Image (tube, rainbow, N blue to C red):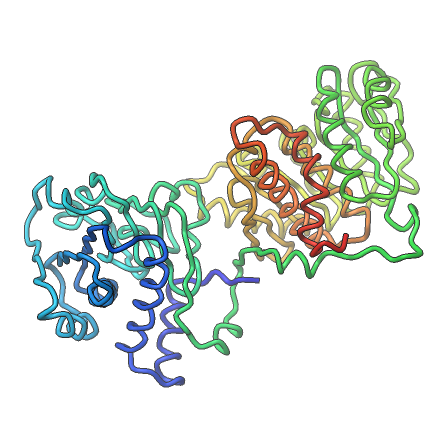
Length: 501
């Protein structure tokens, strides 16, 4: 797992590297500059005119070092330094190294609107991740000019004005790409910061591997290697009983499609046996649409009202297209009273929990709840920002002793212990009705096969997003529909398994 560290932890890691490698602070900065430049030159040739905007702290020192290295590679570079604050020792060292190569353009007052008109690329090196206040005055004026520039905007480490570990206010650079040193920052994973971060990239600057490994954190992001280690290959002498029997409680009049999507995904996720409990009106549709599944028929015509015997089921998935009729609420209450194994709870089942909060305390430990942000708000209450929402997510996971998955661009998966794993697959094409039902099916199918709740969530969310990425590669984002994810789920499994599925 790749760690996401706080600003204080990164500062400690820097200091430890300087002391124990040992390496001089200015030489560690040189490594950071070199890593940035190696990333940069793969994406921009020497015909591009570059402007670098520096503060007088260490992020500005990075900017000066980057300028010197790009000049040595025959790029056309203009450097601006915004006056204000006492220069750091490493900034001064890099200014001395740069003298004679380029004349520094000093900004002491509001710059003209045309200041960056000659630049094809503007590199932001005003402030780094240690910023703890909103930017105002001359800094805000310069940032306004950067954001107005008709140029490719690239931020060094973090966009200036963006706080790494807390909500941001004031002027913030709107970078199109952010090249971050060693580890990503928590702020990168929140939708409200997307206009500032753009696409983020990580470059290794050689911070002390031992301390990095030993540093504890509650935040990680997930890679293909992480999910590959969780994937379990099938044994030669296994049979359908080996892979569990899932009960899917889903569908109501007009929403049988949600049950179909979840059921098809559940089967593609590898479950041994599947029974779908659905109202009378869904019976014929489901028998034809999902022939591999058995169907348990509720006595009611249009919505589910009665829990079938839960004996013999490895897992229950409940919620897609369920509705919230009074009889369905009573059924949900009965499920929670009688079934004590982990469940997957989504959609209307979550809304029932939010409306009848006493039921939250009956959720079996080890369950997986999969709200989108509005459903989470109904469950946990409103929050002022995404940092606060993340803390509420941790709190809810601890309270329920379950895994809470809040869906989004970087879906966050929180363990019962309050550790958060951010998913890195998926794309905007998946912002369409039914994709959440597909996820419910995948998670239910994995949980039925004796994956732990956390492993099922990490693996399932990653596969869900990866299926969307593979589908988008062939079909594009605009035309993607939820059933495409089911179609591409086998390819996603093959990629995660290394072609051994």
